[in-house]
Image: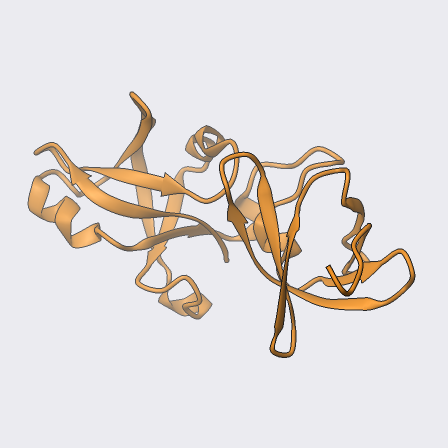
Length: 168
């Protein structure tokens, strides 16, 4: 499952919820007829509950969604804090230079000298750009996910090549 975001709060009295997306272009998710919800982002696949999407839209600076069968505030409150995900095959396609965060987690990171810097543990959004959280044992590196530092992402070999030194 690819974790897309999280339900952060109920919205109104008719069962709508506020959604905090992880990543870009969350409005493309409305093309998926259902989302999957779970209490934990790292839940096993069988723990994800499918929910048929009834509505999804921007509301000011926020995103709100509604699900079939959730028609009041108490139903929306029961969903608060749950993670939103979808199987990889249900996700909209990406362009050649676009990646889902879930595709990057677990990839090896190697610098131009061929030195291993570790493995992508997570990504975070800083507002200006995304940042790779790379772990090598007890050592963590934060590498901006921008063209100046990320030279190549090779999904088949599960490797990211970066312009980054071990001592930075």
